[in-house]
Amino acid sequence: MAQAGTVDRILDTAEVLFAQKGFAETSLRAITSKAGVNLAAVNYHFGSKEALIQAVFERFLTPFSLALDAKLDEMEASGIPDTPENVLGIVFRLALGTHPDDPQRAAIFFRLSGQAYSQPQGHLREYLHTHYGAVFARLQLHLHQAVPGVPPMELFWRVQFSLGAVIFTLSGMQSLQSISKADFNMDASTADITKRLLPFLVGGIQAEVPDQPLQTER
Amino acid sequence: MAQAGTVDRILDTAEVLFAQKGFAETSLRAITSKAGVNLAAVNYHFGSKEALIQAVFERFLTPFSLALDAKLDEMEASGIPDTPENVLGIVFRLALGTHPDDPQRAAIFFRLSGQAYSQPQGHLREYLHTHYGAVFARLQLHLHQAVPGVPPMELFWRVQFSLGAVIFTLSGMQSLQSISKADFNMDASTADITKRLLPFLVGGIQAEVPDQPLQTER
DNA sequence: CTGGCAGCCAAACGTATGTTTGAAACGTAT
DNA sequence: ATACGTTTCAAACATACGTTTGGCTGCCAG
Image 1 (cartoon, chains in turn orange, red, brown, yellow):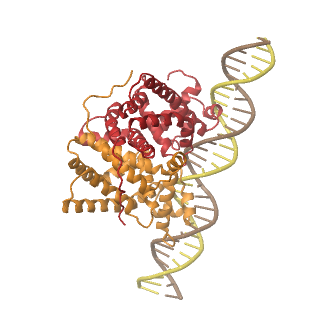
Image 2: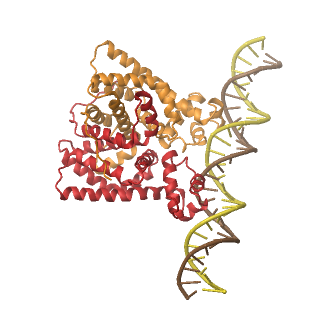
């Protein structure tokens, strides 16, 4: 990060600040001053703040989705069976491993995703869905092979639930760490949590689907 | 909502707008103009915007946590066994049922919680933990009785995962509905999703805890 | 040497925000 | 009817933001 060009310095700083404080709460002045570049540089190189946000995501997700695609190819070629553990394991190892130089990068990745999804008007969400929906669909297909007993519609929602568990937990890890430290006197790293996540998600995804509805009380 | 006092009109409007667009993105002018009150009314009655946000949460969570406490009392008294289904079922029925007059209210509730938790600096999160941590701990205790095989630390994280699945999904439901509608030509209500959530969470919470760690690739 | 051009910079612009002010309107008890 | 505390109001205030501007740099081709 030391002596990169202006564009990369902006992206590096923006991705950290966005993850830390959110999009609206992070001003261009905060980004540019911390990055050591001029305020006008963002609008010069990216056009607008919103374009900056998109650029940050693109730099994150494009390598990730490409790597995921490759891993799925590899999995299909080598005949590794479609089990929930295998499919989810690929995603997790990739999310933790795409940037081995910086272990905190994975946390930033999830935090950013959380910000993007909780962004209520959600044009970012649409952007993600149109640009990376293909890999997502492919992933879901493999999951369907893994748990054929779960109908596609049900599986769709269970993947959403899983996404929520992952993103929510890892994006809020800093605060949760302080809580878990106070209650259990124990530390928790990203890799540690991921290790705990896998069996939880597998258990949830391959749970039996019931027939009778849940009655609400009125 | 028709002819309430100024304070309630502000709270009613603010809670909807906060849920729709987030805290930072919702201006006091937007709230007051939609509520039909003067701009200065917020600072007069609440002191500041941040105090307004807290007031909105208090009005939501206090009745909820009281009702939850009562339900847990009731459960202990009548000797209903501690199973994951029963404990989680109580929470869900309560979240959906505390405001039977307005079915959309539950969605707002979860959306707001999502906003609060993804709020990165997290003083709201601290507020929630200090004010409603007791009920939360009680809930977790019952869950521990339900799945004694899962160590408390592991259970703590699984509850976080569950929270993430619930809040994330329901807080992003509007956008997800359009996706699921496009892919499956089917609609999804809050109650519908909750029905799908329960078996997923139960499956995740009572999953076996493994011994061997997940190796990351380096 | 010189022209052109992409990158960079300080400064300013317009706008939107949260907050404060001081007076008007209201309701109520004396 | 009058006085008083509360509530409402239009207006202004200070500040922070994203964006734009016009000129300054350094570099490379001609």
